[in-house]
Length: 231
Image (tube, rainbow, N blue to C red):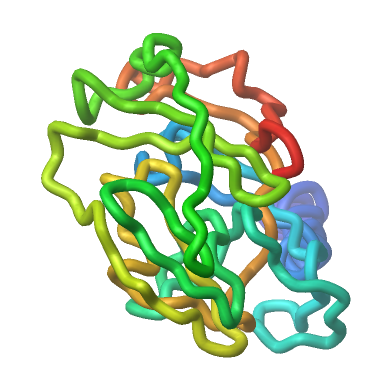
C-alpha cells in the first residue's frame, strides 16, 4: 500500500503539483486565456471562442493581483481588452472606445468621439448570419476608429440603447463597448473601467467551439487574429 502511495505521488501528484506551481504564476502575470460565453463582441468574437490574453501588453503585475510592478504603455482606441467589471468584478471582454479625457457620444448607433462622427463602411450581413441568431436581419459595418478598423453590428429587431451621452471619460479610466452594440452590457451601463482593472489585451482566438451546434469545433477560427487592420 505504501509503495503504491509513493508511486502515485512520484508519477502523478508531484509532477502535476510542480506544473501548477510553475504555470499558475506565469498565467497570472504573463499570458492568459478567456472563454467567451456571450455574443456581445459579435461578429469579431463569437460565443465559444477561447481568446489569448497578453498580460504584458501594457504592464507587469504582481502574480494573482492587479498591482503594477512596471508599466510601459496604456490601452489604445480599438484595443480588445479583458478587464474586471466595475459593477461586480466579473471578467469581461470589450473594445476600448474612449480614452481618459475623451468625450463619447452615441447618436442613433453612430459613434462620436470628441464631437466628430466616426465613418462606417457597410458590409453584406450574409456572410455573418450563420453565427448571428439574435436577429434575422442584422446590420454589419466596418467602423473606422482612428487607425483601427473593426466590425460592428446592430440588431434592429431588438430594444436597445442606441443613443448615449455626451460623456467625458474621467482620468485613469476607459470607456468600453461591445462590437454588437445592441447586445452588450458595457460602459454605457456599468461605467468606465479603472486602468488598474485592465488585465491585458486579447489578440487572437486560440480555439473555438460552436455553442449553438453541440460544441462542434470551428476549425477556421483556430489561431484566428482579432483584427482587420491596426486593431
